[in-house]
Image (tube, rainbow, N blue to C red; front, side, top):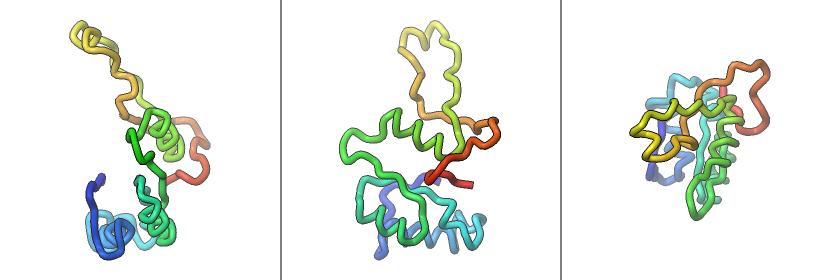
Length: 119
């Protein structure tokens, strides 16, 4: 799940640990923390999460995540951006749907890469 404004005594890492142990992420099992990715722009939150065994991705302080950031995240998770739907007359007049942030699982074998991978 995506959770915004998660706060607690041990920061977002503590909040995530609670979700994995007792909450909506308990189905991930005892090693579930290693299957969670925290995207944040606060280096202290990222350090806490990394020390707890949670995967991390540093978001830019300003401007939010850009298409290149999503491409990196999707690649690390073994996903590829989905193809935008063909333009319809209404959509064509509103502009492109490229960069919509949608993703689909990659079918290519061995598509997982390095540190951003989640299983």
